[in-house]
Image 1: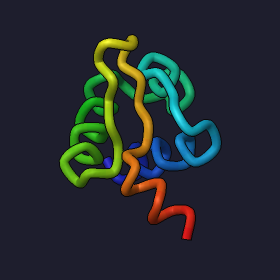
Image 2 (image 1 turned 180 degrees about the horizontal axis):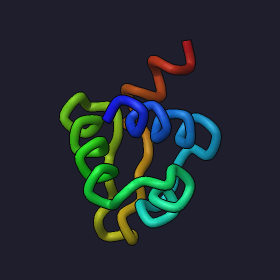
Image 3 (image 1 turned 90 degrees about the vertical axis):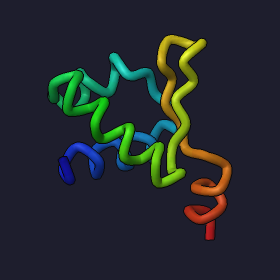
Image 4 (image 1 turned 90 degrees about the horizontal axis):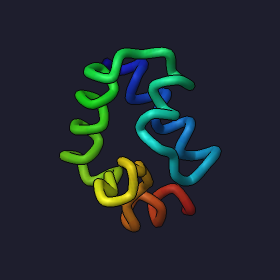
Length: 69
């Protein structure tokens, strides 16, 4: 799962936000593996998943502040 988490973070650093379907394609992983990794990142407070907007994944405000230092 570490490679998937790393991949998600790298994509978000480049794009800022990305849809779950696009992440599955970019990282070439199963949807289940991707969901597990995203749940981990959500529990750590690093990403938000906007479920009303076609499962849009983006960094939380706190994560953006940490990354901008």
